[in-house]
Amino acid sequence: MKSREAQEQEIVIQWCNLQSCKCKELELIYHIPNGGKRNAREAASLKRQGVKSGVPDLHLPVPKNGYNSLYIEMKVNKNKCSENQNKWISKLLE
Image (cartoon, rainbow, N blue to C red):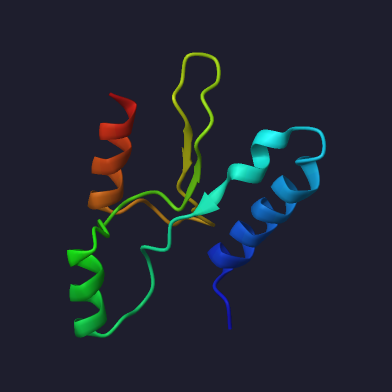
């Protein structure tokens, strides 16, 4: 069964896909699959490949209004960002 956060993220992506006829840039949004449970070998391999803990869930690499791009960290209900997620968000805001 999918998590509520995964369901909400699918809705965001579906909305972007529907709106891309009006705003072509929305076609560029993508998911950064850093989360999820993995075995130790796979996790170590992904880390060597550059996966970094805390990177936001979605990225829209389109510069607008003085910003370089948009990162979105999905949270539902009362879920809070992890320490690593807060560090990434702070770095991205610099």
